[in-house]
Image (cartoon, protein in one colour):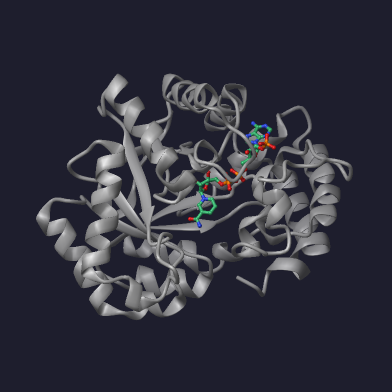
Length: 327
Ligand SMILES: NC(=O)c1ccc[n+]([C@@H]2O[C@H](COP(=O)([O-])OP(=O)(O)OC[C@H]3O[C@@H](n4cnc5c(N)ncnc54)[C@H](OP(=O)(O)O)[C@@H]3O)[C@@H](O)[C@H]2O)c1
């Protein structure tokens, strides 16, 4: 698989990683065998970059990865986790040196490693990005060897730009997909200029961009695509990328047509991979087959000019009004 340098971490990672939220919870039931099967399928097929968080299943996702690392070894793999989601409120006052130390120590234990490869602040409130003390504490964690590098996972373009301007932020994780184009305007160019890695999350718009759902599809009660459809539990932009479900289903039918003979999910991921400034895309998956389908994106040719123009038109006609000015 093609590899790229993960921003200021200096590490090489494959362009298609694995999002490991599904291994924790929030997507209906994923049992232990299924979770480990997804991880094994990914790494066996060439994935070298895993993204998790301390709150995915309250440590379940990290613990699975820890178990997997013990089985297989860490060689060649980069594991990014996130902290901050365990705070009552993700305000600057919660991101103290003591809390950051305690959260990262817990992730080190869950993952079974002395040094975390990459720790991302997990969508804190906007003011955190301008709070020097938070980043001083992260610098101290790097100096102590508890973490090798840090980055941020953001909701908005403005938060990304503030983070990129900081000297030691290695990576920015942001929603980017054919239904979320705003990061293309300023965030990707700024990240490239600064040498900051871009981790593109929710690349399939929570599965919409696989083209497989219709107006009658239902999701389990404990799947965020049921319980967060209107932002009841966390930022609505994380579920279906903020696109109203029925609008997304209609638009995804068109994406399927534009993709032609190519598997729609892989086609949608190829689009993300080819945006200048993107380091890696981290689709989540609920089965080994999905993992393998997604990895196929790394071998696809770039989209044609006609396909790119068709996607842009689709965004302008159907999607832009719902998302463009919100994040
Ligand atoms: N705040 C944050 O920092 C944050 C927020 C969200 C996500 N993330 C990270 O980003 C990762 C990716 O985002 P995401 O998981 O939310 O959304 P996503 O990658 O856009 O969508 C994942 C879903 O798409 C479907 N899918 C995946 N591959 C498929 C394939 N080949 N064919 C058909 N369907 C396929 C599956 O849905 P079904 O289960 O219906 O099959 C899967 O659960 C997460 O796992 C997590 O690591 C971070």
